[in-house]
Length: 328
Ligand code: ACO
Image 1 (cartoon, helix red, strand yellow):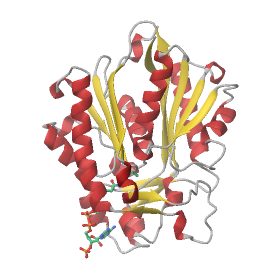
Image 2 (cartoon, helix red, strand yellow; image 1 turned 135 degrees about the vertical axis):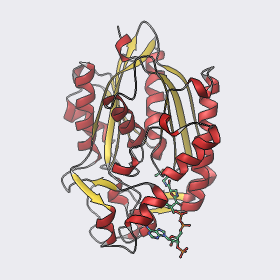
Image 3 (spheres, helix red, strand yellow; image 1 turned 180 degrees about the vertical axis):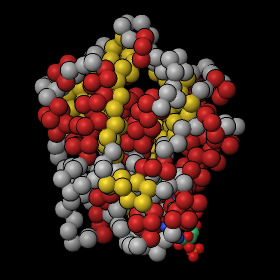
Image 4 (cartoon, protein in one colour; image 1 turned 90 degrees about the vertical axis):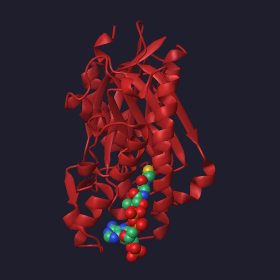
């Protein structure tokens, strides 16, 4: 059985936190953040929101675009490393809130690579003939795991969610190739000891906060984006010049630019929304894909590469032929 994306949606919390706002709380500057990362502002969830509530909002929009009711879903996969609770899965809360009765529901934690991991998993279930309609959501309440006194991490991240509906299709698949992997020897370069999806860390306990070796993650990110993009394009039997749009994980513009330069890809072919949202971890490629469609950066038949790296150290990429109109 073939599979393809038929719906997409995103949700960004209302509250905007600008670089200027951060200047008031930590020793940083708008100029430093923008030159070193490309980020101008990010979104922060309200106290009554969580990864699940953002996932529900993004998922509903994706279902609307696909013209599918929640009851028709066979499976709900949520990619997150900032779950509401350790148990049950955030996907269980999303499944219930959407009314996707009886659908299988589980989370995928592959940090920033999580959305692409989850998308690849969804395609395997459809290819095997086990499912027809799957909702894949990436939702991250990263701000809950940020030490707002640590300027080396607090300027980088933001909250948000992106979703796609993947459906079985008799005609053709839109996922032409994929690559996924991990190097656990780098697990200590980026981690969160204790999860804190809900705003419960009232004692400012540092064990709930993200710890990152920025320099080594930076080096890994540049190499991963370039190597994994090459591998996935080769696996699809294509050349770099055949790709119409690259949607990389939005971590740092300097990481993206160094990787794209290594691949010889011009900036017009690279989608960027990091300036407005910062690094939204797993949600980043999902939100970017959704915005690329909304901004008509993707046309029917275009070849698009989604590529990400993250804690783990993990990586994942896929080549998609963008053809939602071909669904039958
Ligand atoms: N404002 C002002 N100065 C700062 C800030 C800040 N926010 N943060 C660090 N500095 C200072 C440092 O203290 C240092 O000062 P010093 O020279 O006096 O010691 C100086 O700026 C340079 O620091 P570097 O760490 O060398 O800065 P660099 O250019 O490497 O940028 C950054 C740091 C932005 C964190 C970069 O290393 C990076 O982007 N790393 C990758 C991060 C990433 O992508 N993480 C997410 C991975 S995906 C996932 O799974 C979540």
